[in-house]
Length: 281
Length: 265
Image (cartoon, rainbow over all chains, first blue to last red):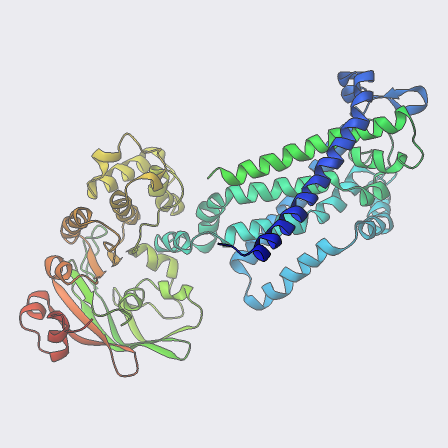
């Protein structure tokens, strides 16, 4: 039998845990209450696939932002994922303890740098570099992809490293006993065995990239047009909200909440697929 | 040395000469000298913790995976010292296969487990790979049981089948020596008997070294037995090495006799 004191403590913890959950519910409800009416008014199809975003003329089409988000995120994945995978393989399999003990915290530190600092660095170095050497305004999808590619590294590296390290030692022994080299073992046995964890890592990294706002505002140029090349400026779903929230009102403000609904849906979809990837063994 | 014939057929010498092994400062094996008979089964027996597995893992340098291991003396495979600086460890492990205590199949299909070795050693031809799959499964008498389920996840087989599949996987890369590290300890009696029969068959072509806790098993399957024991500072030493019949019926050393008759261990 539990003492009353113990039961009381348990209750307290339950209440606190539920309250953090209720914040999630509250935010979701709020966004939907604010956003759904405008989607209904404009029409779901015209809201999502409309190509003109002109709040002053009551035109709310977020398709350019969806394209922008997808393009920047894909670019970030193309840049970030290979680097992150190499890094996690290096840390899990090759790095001597001394190196690992320096690199691992350094990568964690990467996650702690405020996003505005990434954006500032991108604006001062990446953007001019692109403008001078590749042409265009510099403020571009490429610049955003590079910054987000770096920003997703800690997430992807640490989760894939953990999934490699958590493999049973027997896999490696079995492969070595067949006369496979270390790299053959990694490629043909360890990576496939850790696949679900690595896929989850990539999806969560992508979720991190698609949700990022501040750094992207600073380097992306924020033009509301469907970009034609990676050197063109673009606007993402997040930056659309970030830029216009300060002065929007009425339908305009609601349309920004509706943008948030779309963003929330995408991120929930990504998280759910990450969950699914780790569950399926 | 001898003329080379097909793999697994040639006369092949393995053994140790005055080998000691250290885990850091701890000495796990002391001065072990052992000459293994080719194409026979040698059992390494002895109480828990006496270094049986450590001794076995010298022959394919599996101890290398443990940090801080140091080896003194010579370990010979085909007359060459495997702890020499210029030893090709990968090639060594291809020649000296290993079956572990518990089945350690990869999380992929039955067929994939069997083709990964040959494929990584350069064989790309799917028809030839399929031949290897069938041959190795027949060698372990598993073909009839799984021939229609080659795409099935290997880890969904019964434990006994998994262990036979592990042996088949070892055979796919055509080793000359097979090390078996208590490979029946996780199995039920019936599966154990099947593996023992299999070992008898394989010993016609392969040199088998097996570590076992199970005295009856050592008596049943092996031609030679090596009895290992911890000395006063806990290092494993070779007490007696003789034909299995002799070790079990007429041990020369009192300690062997005591162990065999079950007074300790």
